[in-house]
Image (cartoon, rainbow, N blue to C red):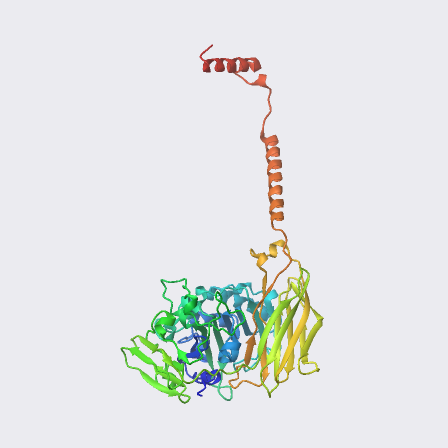
Length: 584
């Protein structure tokens, strides 16, 4: 059976930065089970350090470069993510999780500063500037959402003087990633979505994916001896598209389900019945037909003229498929096809100025998908009930039968979620030893900073580690609740960084759990409304009466000139009434 190429080998196909200013891009397509496909877009641009300092930008975007210079940021990592990576079905994460972020927006950077206060001031400058650049709420990353990780992140770049660098990390799990973030992301590219693989990026398809993440990484890269340094910027877009859902035309936005008699059901499920069906996965190797234009909604607009045109770097679109898979090319321009990494990856050099499309006809396959097993499986949840206390449980499983895994577990909790450190318990199913080797804990301060917890742990082979701790819920002021207070508050996902086994690319191996939804004691917001209305009414009545007493002049009726006194007024009114009834 022919196994599919692991993602680690696919990552190695991306060209490394050179000492000169250049630009590379590549799209990797990888079929996944249940009629899904993983599309990984990678854009890499380099700029020499001298040109960057002189603001002589060629491929590096000037808008982002000036922000980094003003905020003294030496290395930057920004993530926009939605959805959940299904490790049980899809296997290992792309890029070993190094280009993946938690749900919402995640940002961490190494900033130069003589003190922590100076670095934090520049951090606020950076978040506010990036907020305007990417149309996101990054300006809400304040002191309560900022931590300083100790063991979880390592710099990817080469820093000559690291003594004055400060690592700061912030998350916004409630941020909704949308087209407003994709548009400035694409504008940072040299071809700006007009040509190259970036012309396939469409908000309707990207944000309709089962899982997607956009990342921006800026780091200095130096040759041996610290010379010939460049500033490398890498932009990555990863998405998992459902082929059948993506092929749906735009004039049919609401999918019409097939009749149940036309769906192949898994009758082995205990809940299978005449009115309920669990779709049966194709086990006979049949793969449905699809093409790039169908799943991305538009064709690929040829090659970007600024990409490299020599060697393997010239092959822009790569497909991870066995040799028996039939792939047809539709284009009016010249193109080249090559097999990389054996016969499991086919790459294509795009024509310039002509549309390019890959067509995958329906075909019966004799080889199945073999997915790389992730190094760890992780899940996290909130337990307990009531409005006062609760507990968090994280379950981490090591699928390896021979190798133990050492990792760092990071949690950044909001200040109104106060954990009890003495209740922290870690239990391994196959051992009685304490798996926690090192602990870093920084408690929260109300309305000033959140909780920062880092644990270095070791999990044996074929074991499951269960981590639990209790926490207390704080009561907020009514002005601190969001408009959808009854929905709950989002808690940032936990970050897991593997120490052993080390990654081969030096970027590290990361996992992120799903975010949590924390319900807090919510007051009856109609009561403040009633108090405000009652207070406003009382103030209006009081002010109106006092104003009338101050400005109104009181005089006797007989003092009014021209009326003949009170008797004259009464006679005039009686005469007017008689006139109305005919003078009778």
